[in-house]
Length: 399
Ligand SMILES: *Cc1c(COP(=O)(O)O)cnc(C)c1O
Image (cartoon, rainbow, N blue to C red; front, side):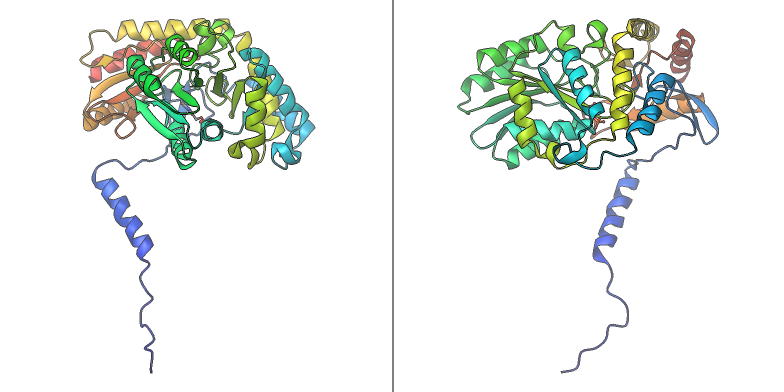
């Protein structure tokens, strides 16, 4: 038998499929693109030579560009080198990591803490490690994407995952009351990342106690900002560091550096250290990052003036935007969502602001529910009263 040599190479079907999908995304105007910043993160950003006021970053205390923290990072690199060399359990756990863990435990009031390279990773390490076959996880519908992915992993481990309507304590109680699961775990953002509102943590904690459940709290946007000395959402609500709570916080937002932690009882943290795959099978962050974070923690503790300025700017913005055709969600935090509705209108408003030198990102479905496209205004302690006035005037003239 004679086989004919193909005259043209076989078409790469996979690449062709991806190109088609990308084209479909472009056709609906949903292509995502990155802007390249020519300046460090701060209240101003320069993009393509254009200077804009930055309302896009999660740098709530203005610490990302802080010189003392950058100095601690540089000194840390000189003393400890560039890399950790291995995972924490092999040989990558250095003195600065150990010190940072203790400092975070003391700061949050928990017995112990573990640190991670990112918040995404921290969330993957917690719920899927604690919940398996016969267990049930109850998750708020508006939880962050990283928690949603953690739920998928928990499901793959055999756990039953139920999502309850946003902040609906009564619906959650029904689920808990009828659950026959072994372990019951409630998972929630403390501050919701697209709405800026707070979870009713005291009510959730009361349910956890009543139904012998655990409460896992993602405090990405509360840590450093809320509570006395910025100790976070639990401190804001005056809740105890209970052994049935695990507190996750990110260190790339208000803390201005990068990474995350999980704090809890000595037993729960030891369990995560022994069994958390997303903790065990990844290289420890560079030790200099831990040095920078220890400095950042000091600045957060002493940062009452920063937090007072942040709260004043939030209040100024909310007062100034009353009477606009669009409404601000009732958010008490640095995340101030202005609901526009239609995707095109949100993008048009964001573009109009950009042309006036203001960077305020539009957030569209599927990141937020259909019909609720919005501007997500991130307020920072680095903003001045004049910055906020500029934003208010521009919004009034563009809306
Ligand atoms: C940003 C964020 C994360 C992820 O943290 P990273 O350190 O950016 O990976 C997790 N949860 C919430 C609620 C967040 O906003």
